Image: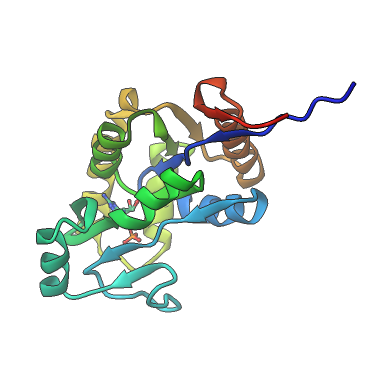
Length: 205
Ligand code: 5GP
């Protein structure tokens, strides 16, 4: 006898946080290339685009007035000031994804993760990415040569503060090797998708 099952569930909001220099964006890109049906959430930011970044691909680049307008119109599910610029997660695509069972991937800081864990509750799954060591993080930040000494020191201090929020996260990983880190992230996605507690509708068999 053959049994076919069709289970339905809400979408999952996968959050990846970690200090700049931990290698998060490489991991996020590799995960998106590897896992099907995972959509990157594109945030709004007031920071200037870096070389190679395109409006609508890495971020929606907006000025402070436009950001403030969107914030005041409650268009953000969360927003935060990070390294002197404003960043916000657009609410609508996230709510639609959760409702239709689409999984989203967000690269946001600890403040954003805290906020979304509170509002999306069990639909939100947060992973903290650590660099191999604080010394290695400092080396990577200095190797970028795009930041002056004071900025590097500020980012290192912030990285340590952010790491203290680990207890609010569901998973962690130390990014020593990209391949291993992506495999770990993929395992997290696969396991979270397989949770019985997420089933909302048992379809016809
Ligand atoms: P970057 O400017 O290097 O792309 O990002 C700086 C930091 O801002 C990163 O830690 C990134 O995770 C965080 N970030 C990016 N978008 C958002 C967002 O929409 N909300 C919050 N809270 N943080 C964000």
